[in-house]
Length: 396
Image (cartoon, rainbow, N blue to C red; front, side, top):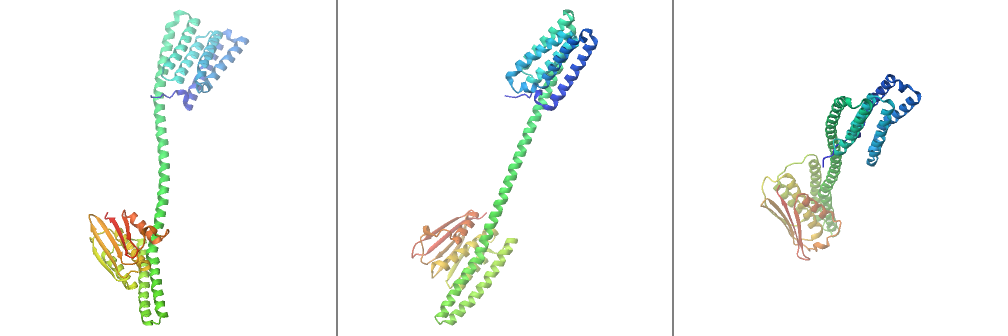
């Protein structure tokens, strides 16, 4: 149901209306006091001023009654009684007309163009007609109609126009409030996105550091431990060979770290096949574990997908070197139906995939990378039968 905003609910226009009405009532009162000698009698003048002051004061505190709908009927009766008393004391047609027309305008202002508004207006119009007949007699009813009807029409039109404007202003204010609320919500969302972006970037940097420095250093430690074992067993020549490989691995790790830092600044677009072949070759050279590579992928793979495969391959081969105790390993990379499949196999001791230790960061980082790429990870392994890591990722 459409609601209408009474004029009395708006502070600025209410003050203007009441000031105008106050000025008119005071002016008509002064005219009546000057024009009619009876009004200059002290008792009559005192009572008239007191009642007129009460009448004007009630106009100004109308909001108190308007906020309590049950009180409005008492307000109307009280103002009607004051109007009767004022007309009785003054016996002035100007006072009668001014008091009644002010109440008519106020009735429409309180109730709007509604059934109650017209009933209140009719009540005051009847009082006004009664005042006019009482003061001037029935022969002057035509003059009353000539003054009252234009005033009523003006008040009704004014209130209707103002009501529409007020409703439009309220709708505009409501929309403005909604926009401000939406703006605040968007600001909160932007802050949350920024926080998530920072967190995601930290995770990415952690993975980059793990995939380069952590894996590289782990490989160096394994090689140095092997060299130490050969030295203790008196096989210095073999230890020297491993140390040479370790030095080469250290240089490669340093180069990988530098490349990772450069990629953080500005991602590069290297050839994916060359990168995977290089990773497999370095693994075999540093660990002595033979690794065969079968690769059949498009030339124009996205750089981020190639980078993800490189990191996953490095992590998978690092796990073989550290945990598998394998004699042979194999990497198979293929593409079909806009999907890349990367499979890393070994013939090592195997394990139960359900018993992977919690907090194993290499596997956590691998899963995170695959999930970010929209892919899946499968681990197939049995004790004594080796392990297969199968990764599938979409080509976007």
